[in-house]
Each structure stands twice: as C-alpha cells, then as structure tokens.
Amino acid sequence: MKPAVVLLSGGLDSATTLAIARSQGYEAYALSFAYGQRHSRELDSAGRVATALGAKNRLVLTLDQDQRRSGPRSDRADMGDDQARPE
Image (cartoon, rainbow, N blue to C red; front, side, top):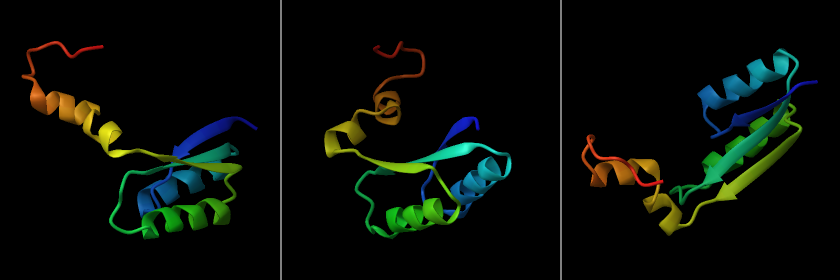
C-alpha cells in the first residue's frame, strides 16, 4: 500500500479526503493540529473519523501561541507584498 498523509480537522471536507484516500488503496496517516481551538470537539471528531475510516495512525501536533503568531500569514501581514520574506 502507498502511504498518504491526510490533514484531518474533523470537518466534512477532510473526512471526505480521508475516505477517498482509503477507497483508492492508500494507507492513510491522519494529521491534526491543536492550535487553541475554542472547543475540543474538532479534535474529538477528527479522532472518531480517523478510527471509523481506518487511518493507520493519527498524530496531533500542538502549536503554542508563539508558533501561531510566527506563521506565514502573520509574516505577510507585517510586510508589503513587494518585500522579500525572511528565510
């Protein structure tokens, strides 16, 4: 089986993506992010979806406040589009 990493939020779109990957014979690995959501139900739902659809494994990465602020979106907001982004 070919491996596939599926970003799994617990919503309908990511659940559908996982279902398609599994139906096409991929060994799916589910990846979710805990980024300080207001409710844990998103991650709970992602776990249930991963189990129900036969994901080989599921990993939840926890992002802290500093990591969330230093992502590409915040960098872009701080700089004009014509400026180079730091590496």
